[in-house]
Image (cartoon, rainbow, N blue to C red; front, side, top):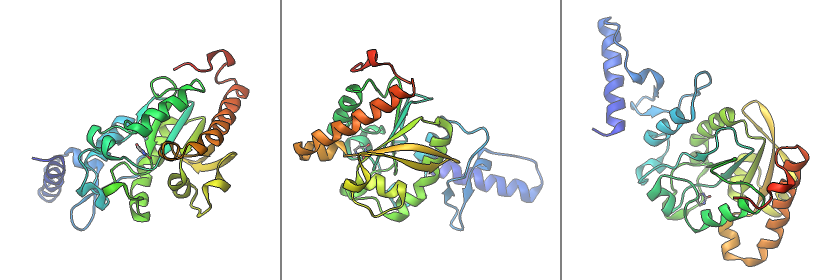
Length: 245
Ligand code: URA
């Protein structure tokens, strides 16, 4: 039985128990279902955990991206990160691995982070605005980012990152609900209103863009230095740890 079928069965048993008054309660109580009996993403607040969110993402059917995915990539990294990196969505490598940013762009992202003393193992959490691969690596559709947004919101609420590093135009436009160009959005700290707080967010080039166009490497490095300076100013990272993986 697939996880989705299990959930549907659990939901059916709950309905039957309600009807029969048996007091039986399955795990389906944590899920909401639409009129077609499809599990929906609940807006969790209390007792939420990253593992719970990841488990829900893996069986999520809230948008059409679930139909073509091999694995969802919920996100990974430090539990109380200095920086949360938010990209656009999984590509082919991430879909195969069920992990974010593990392909060529991910390897470059790891190098970019390491250059300013950050790492996904120590002090960053890496996620995407959509957790399932858009077919053919097309941009996620507004309804797909909207369906996935509650998961990102819950992750941000739990992680409480000190800063967000937004990778690329697509993620920036989706998070900031704007049509501005990357050129206008990058190179400065903006406030991202998320999880009841205003989190300082720096937008920079997506590592895939840097792989395609070397010219973006210099301005991307300027962005990374800005982030590094803010982390140092806030006493969150020391000058001595610069360049550590
Ligand atoms: N590009 C993204 O935006 N995210 C990934 O996880 C991989 C590539």
